[in-house]
Image: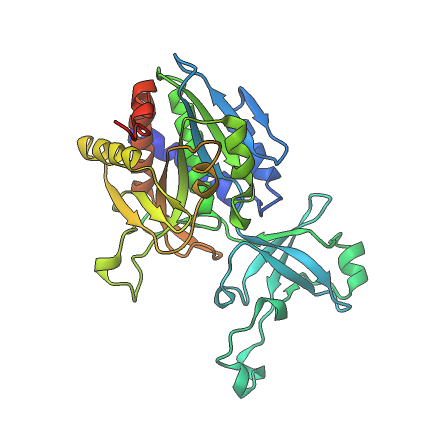
Amino acid sequence: MNNQERREKALHLFARLGEAHGAPGYENAVRSIFREELSENLQTDKTGNVICEKGGIAKSPRILLAAHMDEVGFTVQSITKDGLIKFVPLGSWSPNTLLAQRVRVLTQSGVEIIGVIGAKPPHMLVKDERDRVVPLDEMSVDVGAGSRDEAEGRFGINLGDSIVPYSPFTPMHDPDFLMCKAFDDRVGLALEIQAIQEMKKIDHPNTIFAVGTVQEEVGARGAQTAAPHVNPDAAIVLECSPADDLPGISEDERQGVLGKGVQIRLFDPTALMNRQFVQFVLGLAKEKHIPHQVSVRKKGGTDAKAIHLSGTGVPTIVLGIPARYIHTHNSIIHMNDYLSGIELIMELLPRLNKDMVESFTAFLG
């Protein structure tokens, strides 16, 4: 597949996956897209992870591709007598990003209700409020209901309903820059889907298990059940990593710059990646002249946290597509980073034969 075909397929997946409603524990819409795109050899586990098995010319090694289906969101905690919705976060949010933002409330009947997180206009702010960060437990969503009875009866909103940002997929003025909610981790899921679709035409000396995991944003919970279910010999986590090409971050510290390639992670506080596996991937990227960036993260984590400790251990790497402003209503990625990511994956998967994967854990030589 050439870059133009890959680009067109990616745009299709970004729009479908990015706009889908999928807070932790409410991944049904995303799971349905995964099922439609990868319609063969599918199964789920009891947590809700969806698994596509792609057989090769050998049953082993078993290679796990993992990308999480969920996004940061909220859930309805209570409804006031005036019809305002109080909520609790599902995943990590900064209150600075939320006031006056639109959201989508998913009711139990499947209807989405548009609302806005209320914000006082400056005319009504007293002096002490002007520079104060409003905590989440003081915020509420206004869906236009006049009372609790109307919100519950007419609108069909109940406690525990899911809330996600309202943010359509939008190519920017430079069409290589793309904006949407939930690129964390729908861009990783797009990589996974596209890689399996392309692998249908390629012989590979292994069996690949592409997994859409659930509830990563609340503690990599899906990965904790997916990894022992698959029992992999090696794992590749496909993620959306925070871009750091932002004001206030020195150029010396920048390891995720939009347009400079796929990010190969060496470390984060939850997982120290298998060094032999990382060095193999870095060597391959250099050999094939694939744009890439190397990352040692001070904060954050991925599904690698659970996967690399599964069973007796799984050699694991993380490949990330940098995105500005993740965990907000609008994140931005660059198409060239995605294209370098899919190119690296397609070079990597056919090389993961039994001898190569065993070399990652040959600690005694």
